[in-house]
Each structure stands twice: as structure tokens, then as C-alpha cells.
Image 1 (cartoon, rainbow, N blue to C red):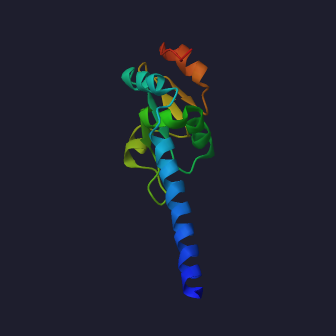
Image 2 (image 1 turned 135 degrees about the vertical axis):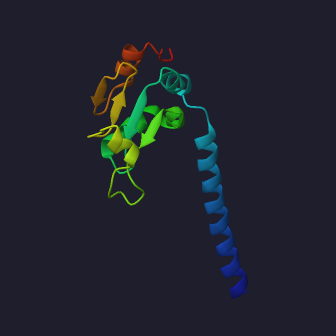
Image 3 (image 1 turned 60 degrees about the vertical axis):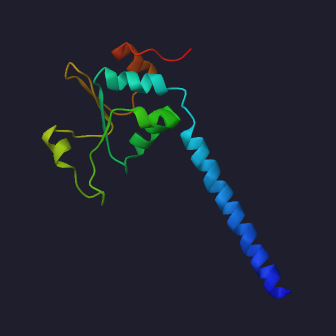
Length: 126
């Protein structure tokens, strides 16, 4: 009987973990409210340079929620977080996040989506 209780507890924990993972996957696959906006930024050839360890980049990403996957993002950090990639060094990226626009203008720091919309003409959802 003790063995059954032990396995039952393990089964319950496994089911909870599996359900949680499934829920997270489901949420990640849901469309974001800024999908079209993020895609428009990419279509307009805007570039978002950032680093995975950058707190300001994480704040910028949160503004886009599930739509961040459509952003024209270039990762500037090496996987160990110790160096900058050659692509970013060649582009002379000095801070994160950096938004680069087709005319060559760059803005460093968190940029509100409204400002990105005004700068690019990409419409925000109503």
C-alpha cells in the first residue's frame, strides 16, 4: 500500500508538471496583439539590436508580449554573455536596446511602441 501511495504522488506531480508545460506552450503559441505591428517594423527594415542579459531589452520585449517573435531582432551577445558578436561589433552597436531605422538613425534605450509607430508609420492596433 505504501508503494502505491508513493507512485500515486509521483503520478500526480508528473501530471501537474506536464499540464503546466502544456499551458505555457499553448500561451506562447497564441497570437500577440502586436503581431502585425512587429511584422510591419521588420517590413520597414527597422533593426532591433539587443542582448539576452540586458534588463532594458527584457523590458522592451515585455512591451511586445507574444509578438516579440516577429521583431527584427539581432542578438549581440555571445552565448556566455561575455562578449559582443562580430555582427554587432561591425555595426558599432554600443548600447542595448538599440533601434536602427532605414535612414541610419539610431535610438538607444527602451522605446515606447507609440514612438516606434510614429517613427515608422506602422499602425498600432485599435
